Image (cartoon, rainbow, N blue to C red; front, side, top):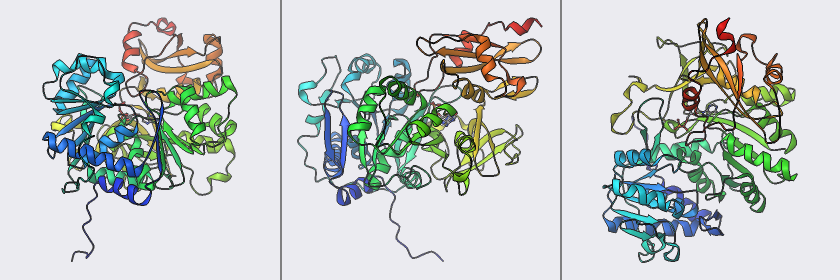
Amino acid sequence: MLGLMQDWPLVVHKIIDHAALYHGDREIVSRTVEGPIHRTNYRKVQGRARRVAKALDRFGIKVGDRIGTLAWNTHRHIETWYGITGIGAIYHTLNPRLFPEQLIYIASHAEDRVLFFDTSFANLVAEIAPKLPSIKLYVALTDRANLPKAEIPNLVAYEDFIAEPADDFTWKDFDENTACGLCYTSGTTGNPKGVLYSHRSNTLHALVASQADAQGVRGVDSVLPVVPMFHANAWALAFVGPMMGAKLVLPGPKLDGESVYELLDTEKVTMTAAVPTVWLMLLQYLEQTGKMLPYLDRVLIGGSACPRSMIEIFERKYEVEVVHAWGMTEMSPLGTLGTLKAGMDTLPYEEQLSVKLKQGHPPFSVEMKIVDDEDRELPRDGKAFGRLKVRGPAVAKAYFKGEGESAFDSEDWFDTGDVATLDTDGYMTITDRAKDVIKSGGEWISSIEIENVAVGHPAVAEAAVIGVAHPKWDERPLLIVVLKPGQKATKDEILKYLSGKIAKWWMPDDVAFVDEIPHTATGKIQKIALRQRFGSYRLPTAAE
Ligand code: ADP
């Protein structure tokens, strides 16, 4: 017998409709690409999203067509997302930090029909446009006065594109499983792979993300997603904000410490989210200026491992609660969040810190297990580590156009490519990405754990650990360090600092000092580049 409840489709335009109707005056504040701060609200954004939908519909865009966006977080970018999805087309976020050839590959693979882009990327767009025959229209996210001069075919200003159609468009009707968004992930091997979200998965994921023990966003919050919309859906905040009626503060192109601080302060931001590198910049700015964070209540940190020292400074010095989160593009992206469980708030602070350093526990709807190389499930004892597999309604079941099939098994378990432990309290800890783990004498060494400790040294700005060939042990860890400006430290001082904080046999065999550590387009340490650079590195222990 089936239940007698309504089959109310979970489609994302219902989110902006809800916001417009019940939180219509709630503000969306953007730092524009042109410079000035812009203020609007959910009612106006919904109206303009309908204009985007109508203009795209007139242009001939159909259900299932892909529409590229190459843009920072601003109100206009949000309007395009809702406008695109409201006609059943698919927003396809492009990461401007990728190389032109990668963008050409991705936009061609996706067969994007239209590209919305910020004027700051005009030269990049002019460079790639000749190689993108599928794109028939380029919409610069600005007004006519600021239209870029670069040579871009079929170019129109966004404000002109949406000026004429009225905002009376009725969203199209389609099934909740209709594709909604597309985001390419660097993937562990081969070409970038497309993750194709559905209306249902995005809506469910936003509901899950907003839970109190997840992002915990409320209508009274002022939310600053520093994490870009092109980085795994801005971790759902472009949906969660309007769903909850929270004020949204959008940083546009400026993600440096001073600019982020200015928005946190003037817009009285209570909740914010970004990768650790962004918070390093903010904390450095606060340290230099002596400024504090009186309004900020909590900060979500994920995308790569959050160092212990960062959690401690935020919580102890600035009284901002840190929620360490883990996820990936294939998971929409949230997988786990590190909020404390019952009873843990009375633990000594150092122990609470150790819990928060873990990547967290999954909210309802995320299933996880760890397996060995033969795909046998490993115990959840906090010690055994193996490949982390996940399943759930907001987890990919395949990549766009059927690539990377080996990551999915017949029971829909997706292999994350991460190596992790699961403990008896339900917390997951990432030891490494499978390809970064250091294999020494048949045992595994966690590069992340050593990095986490190393950045706690007062002179160290950033640290990376890679495995380097060793005649006896196969691989041994090499610690690569960037020092803070004006600071000094020797190899011995750094190794002494690590001693006692990590297992003896994990001690790096050498320390290399560099001016800069390369990062990927999503802000992670680029281990491949480091492994290439230090490929023929001879460890001092290699001769032993
Ligand atoms: P890309 O591989 O394109 O950078 P993602 O942003 O989807 O794409 O990256 C997901 C990966 O980032 C995860 O599989 C994991 O290795 C890493 N990651 C994300 N959050 C954390 C975290 N809190 N701690 C450690 N690693 C993390």
